[in-house]
Structure formats: C-alpha cells, structure tokens
Amino acid sequence: MTDEVTFLRWRRLHRGSSWLLAILALVHSALTFRLGVGWAPEAVWFLGTGLGLLLLALLNLAHVGLGPCPQPTAVAVRYVNWLFVAFGVAAVVAVPEPQASLVLAALVGQALAGTRTPPALPDGRLEPDGRRGGRSFSA
Picture 1 (cartoon, rainbow, N blue to C red):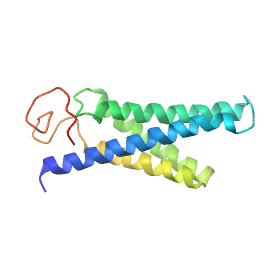
Picture 2: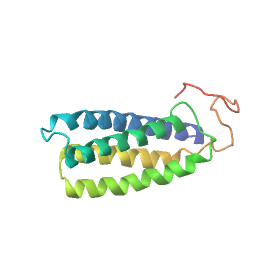
Picture 3: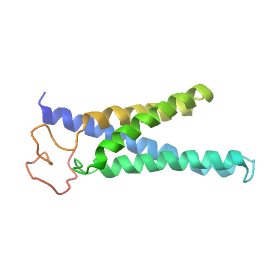
Picture 4: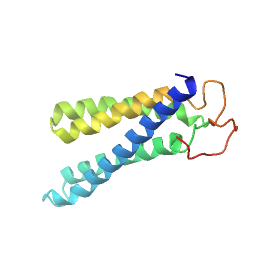
C-alpha cells in the first residue's frame, strides 16, 4: 500500500470520526433541555460539554475535512485531540454509559487519525492529484 493510499484512509477515518463526534455533540446539546432540571448548574455543564465536543469536531473538520491543512494550528489541534481523549476516558469512568463509550471511540478515532494525517502528504504535496494548495473534495 502506498503512502498516499494510507494517508487517504487515515483522512477518511479522521473525517468520519469528526462527523460522528459532531452528531453526538449536537444530540448531547439538544438533550440539555430534556433533562427536566431546568436551567440548573447541571444543565449548564451538560450543554457546555456538548458545545465543547462540537467545537472540537468542527475544528478537526476545518483542518482535514477537505484536504491537508498547511496551517500551523494543525499541530495544536492534534494536542487538543489527545487532551479530549483523556477527558473522554475520565467521562467513561465517571459515567459508564454506552453513549459515553461511543463519544470516547469517536475521540480516539479522531486523535489517532489526526496524528496519522500530517499537514501534507509524505512527499510534501498538499493534494493527492499533485496540486500544491487549494481544496479538493476527493477521498
């Protein structure tokens, strides 16, 4: 398997994990008002967690969703992904529910794939078709 094919597979996993996390975050945030606790501290924390997860998912999609990201913030996104994995592990320990495990799985997929999808392809190109820049909807 070539480096480019490997890169594209990791990028697909990264995008898929990020979309899964975004959907879970939206559902999580929407459920805030179905808890029946009103606007209490628990609701604020619940909504804040959902919004934080949504922000992380959108940040990852912005960096790798359409093509390799040459921005210097790509490295910071990788570190933040692993920080959220640690948060996800703590959440699963504190709330051993299936949905917490699903969020953790999305976080781990996003962090692993984000580590394996560098800002450019192994040979330095920014796009699989040989272009140096721009965005592509391929893979």
